[in-house]
Length: 140
Length: 192
Image 1 (cartoon, one colour):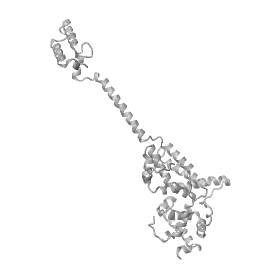
Image 2 (cartoon, chains in turn purple, cyan; image 1 turned 90 degrees about the vertical axis):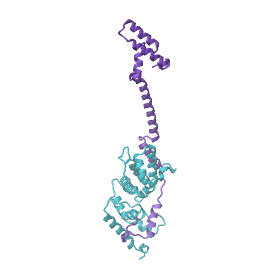
Image 3 (spheres, helix red, strand yellow; image 1 turned 90 degrees about the horizontal axis):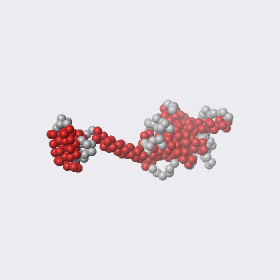
Image 4 (cartoon, chains in turn purple, brown; image 1 turned 180 degrees about the vertical axis):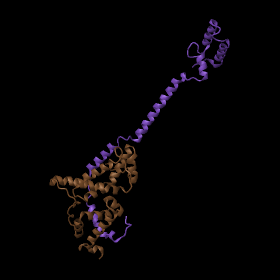
């Protein structure tokens, strides 16, 4: 910072050195102040969470949200069935949780009691789907 | 304050201030610690230009950095450095010291408050004519000489830290150097 070189702005080195020496003889150790300042800084900044803690919190939050979403999907699935599911729900006449030959029997009994309640073609289609799906795939 | 060198010690003041403004708890504390370690000696030096009372200077040191700390959120709004941090700290160090000094003197004198800058005391033992002359300079002149030639501040920076016009800085500096130049014990240093 000695860009100015006007006469009023120059001092002999010997005097500058003496001015500097006046400051140098005054070094102090301040352990109590050091501790106080450190403590004050830690306390003041404490409300800001550390990035590690924040990241950990974020990860926990994300995992929890994913779990909730997954559970919601499983819970919601029966209430928002696709076409195939809808067919299976409709075909699960006895509400057993699976579409099997007992449902076809139930339909057949319904038709026997009231021929207009269900068509023969529907019973045939159900029997055909049960045969083609096989026992495991009929499960809801 | 931790003595070991941390990563933040290698950062600029501007970067450390920014971390104090926006960093997380760990980073901000480390950054402030680095700022403190870096400028502690400077603040003490400034304080001791106005008092030879080391205990009072240590109190001023704590006040300066407490003040600085409170500039950062929370609760402060954040600090934007537009100049060197040392030029920001100078008036705080000076005012803290003078305030503590006035309180101290009020206690001792029952209400007296000095209007002028205090004389920080006699020259050290073994002092020669030059030391005695520097010690006897009016505090205002010694202050401007120290700012210019010890702290190496530009004239504009001095105007900023003292809150006075640039012309006044030049005038005070001129008078301070003139007084030295004309003093019989110091003339020889000017090569005249």
